[in-house]
Amino acid sequence: MALPPCAQDTAPRHLMSASEPASASASAAVSEQAAALATAPGATQVPVPGATQASVPLAAQVPASTADSLASAVERGESSGQAGGKKPECFFFPSERCSIAPMVDVTDSIFRRMTRLMSRRVMLYTEMIAADALVHEKYHLIDFQEEELPCVLQLGGADPHKLAIATKVGVKHGYSAINLNAGCPSDKVQSGSFGAVLMKDPQHLASCYKAMQEAAGAVPVSVKTRIGVDNLDSVDFTLELIGTLYNAGCRHLIIHARKAWLKGLSPKENRTIPPLDYERVYLLKRTWPDLQITINGGITTLEQCQEHLSKVDGVMLGRAIIDNPYLLTALEQNIWEDAIASPVLAESMPTACTLPAALPPLSREEVLEKLILLGEEVIAAGKPVHLLYRHVLGLFTGCPNARLYRRYLSENMTKRNAPATVIKHAYEAMRRGLRN
Ligand SMILES: Cc1cc2nc3c(=O)[nH]c(=O)nc-3n(C[C@H](O)[C@H](O)[C@H](O)COP(=O)(O)O)c2cc1C
Image (cartoon, rainbow, N blue to C red):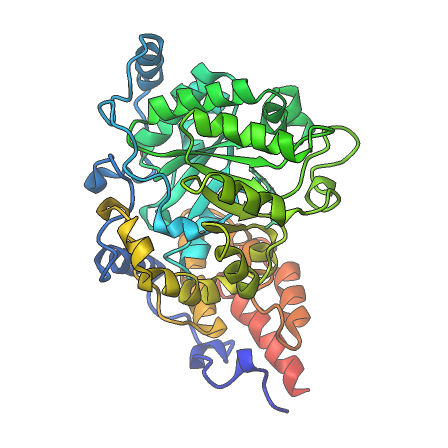
């Protein structure tokens, strides 16, 4: 029986035999990847304008006394110590042309390292981190590895003062940018009066943004929101909301193109039931041409990304990457090509905001090989390998017998001491299914 395009004989030999050991050491491969990122042509800068690049802290710990000193600096109304009162040189990095949405319980550090196996270029986001957690010095929540950059820290909160402190912590940690969540409708977030609730008071939302941007100095701050909330869903309301943020100085907005219902719908239903209105988002770009707009919601293919990019500045994908992580390789190869050729875009890119070089095109089998090495790293760090493999259950989406891979992996990756090679066995189960 002919093999599907994703499982042809390009498969590395050691993936085809259960008995063959995994090759090079995991740490070597991953640090090789980090080195490649740092040295690849066109990848000389990780875009953290205003931050000292060489000193991006890896899993940095902000000293225990830092929150206090940050708090008192904010109290005194000082502008960012990190950036010496600078303003961002650019609000929108080239990588933002395509980004992976912040997703609680998904876009953790391990997920972000997984995505970097397939794309150096996409902008990554953390899960939403409550500003309170950083005010209370839970800095481990925002640790990351250098290979995850460029990466944006998303904060949740409604108190400008606490958001400013949390922003400073994020900037000190070395994040490329900071984002405020003004679109999440979960009950927990509502009880803290943040997330989507912030849309109900655009002036207060703008105050939160301003406090954060002042605290961030040269590091840009963006806002992720929706087109409306509850009955505040008219075109006029959306224009007022976005106009208020624009007047406060905000120049990058991520818009989930549907409204949120605060009562009666679960967060999951709030991602499907309110209808998508992409035209409303395009209108925002036409109204404020110098406002960078990233569109989000229901985008699942490269072609859809390309269509949106003819109307707005960036696309953000969430669930599509959970369902089909291999889509990252197509995005890596295709999203930036026309942009690089465009003199208009090249002109608008300050040198501090260079774009990492693209990874070479990779087959799914090559990705699998890299995943095994990363899996070994995860195990060596004392963590169960399913924390990585839960993110790649969809690696073979669209391939014949993908369900055999998925079933084998989900049944076996959570077993005690599951080895990194469990994913190879899942792949072999799929191939055996094809031969039978
Ligand atoms: C599991 C999950 C967790 C999410 N967590 C967050 C979050 O922490 N912050 C946020 O702004 N949006 C969050 N979202 C919403 C996504 O960022 C995105 O706006 C939404 O899924 C629509 O995009 P999509 O259709 O491409 O998935 C979450 C979505 C999912 C599926």
